[in-house]
Length: 133
Image (cartoon, helix red, strand yellow):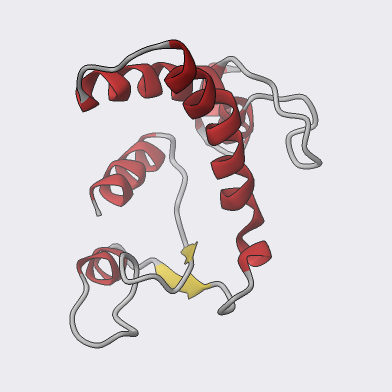
């Protein structure tokens, strides 16, 4: 919920509207297992439709799966092999640096980004593009 609220605020500042969110059917995202859920309430409160991946079909959320693999291979494995972390805050600080690199400095070769950085793609769909051009 905290991530979603921060993302909504960031996108709002970029004049980007989030219409829907795709998640798996995990307990952290849905009340399919019964009862009230803060994540679904958050989305509903912002008029965002919650869509779900098919059960036992992780490839329907391929972008997240690929990001998790990249994060493991490019950040966690090298970081944990080369440094002894004394606290979770220390690990979080290095993760934050990596995520900045991943989103603002590292080019991506997938069919959607074709050599762009994620921030380039985000700015290209934003009204901010017209303000800075």
